[in-house]
Length: 106
Image 1 (cartoon, one colour):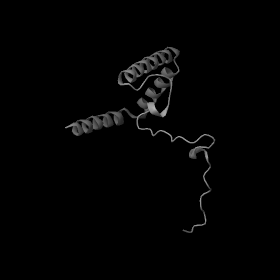
Image 2 (tube, helix red, strand yellow; image 1 turned 45 degrees about the vertical axis):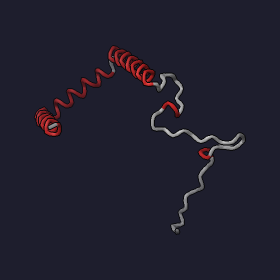
Image 3 (tube, helix red, strand yellow; image 1 turned 120 degrees about the vertical axis):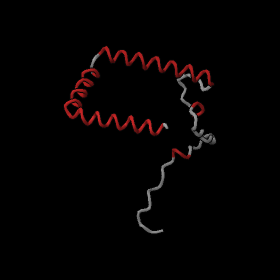
Image 4 (cartoon, one colour; image 1 turned 60 degrees about the vertical axis):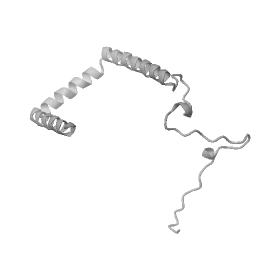
């Protein structure tokens, strides 16, 4: 049922968009360009972004992921922590890789 609703909505949008034509598209594009450069709209977008960041941080704090600015691998879901190395050695990720074999042989 959801696919049918999507297809009907997509079809209606396509037909209406095609009927509107290039002139209407250009009119909408010009309005968007003017609105995008409007300082009041930019201020509202900044306030909305700040509010969204606050909501995200409070949700992270509730879940236990932490909302601090510490961006360690432990706070990112799906990340793999780095292996610890012995003091005085360099981690494997810091060593350069050898150049690729371009001889074409196996």
